[in-house]
Length: 336
Image (cartoon, rainbow, N blue to C red; front, top):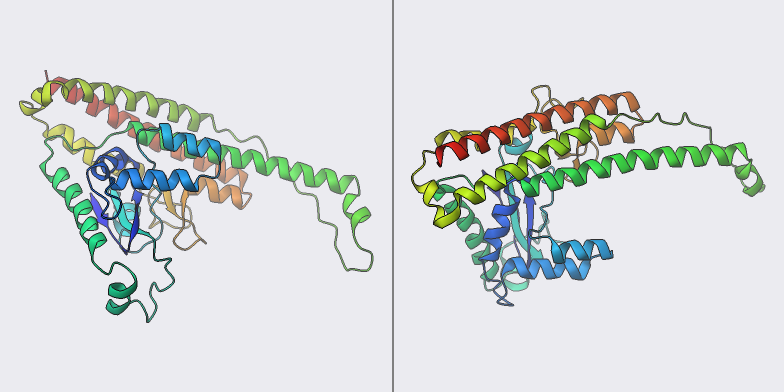
């Protein structure tokens, strides 16, 4: 596991990272006290999310989902080689939201500004140390590495739905534009005093075959649920079964879980970026994209390449499911 904190100020806990660590870091956040409100930093972040929610569905999820979702790690240079190239599960942690920013990487980003306008009493510096330190100690002291996959599977399912929805929206938009051209709407509504050009019709995208991706998500959901059942069983009675079990083989598998999400050839045109589930967009700078090879091929209207990328991601997810199943079987066996 790699933990990065690129910047820190006053305010709310901000979390990014590998979704196999989503449950783990949520539990850490529940045990850290916010210096100002005396709530847990998890509770304060949840309430901030609810206040900022832009839809009833988003608000309901924050209220009902046991763990808050992690944002994806983007193009920050500190963590990039770990997650994007080496496939090492990573986290980005920090606090912010109260100083309104604006000075990052400027000549004003100095000790004077920090001690007069930001975390002037260093209480959020301490909270950051507590958050990162607690995570590192719990990971180091764990007999069984605290990777869990139920949240991970749920996040992957959401990302796949978003990609498939985007593909459908593209088809609808192109069909609608072609229909407007055929009906002469652009010519009829254009201002004759202005220079204008009628758009050209586009080829309507084919119905892409996302079935392998959907099947892989179903398998991932099933294997994650099975691992969770085994984990709960062996963790009963204070984890007595784990205390007497040899977990080396299981832990070795869990450490490989993030690497299973990479491919040797990497993303199309960007071989250095090997993670198939998230990477910074080719033209977005820091901002990350989910299932980037599929998403960016769709954006560029490369339908065949998008379908091929979907099949490749499906195979990656199937490999991950197989690893989770093997880990569940070994965990069940050693804890008997």
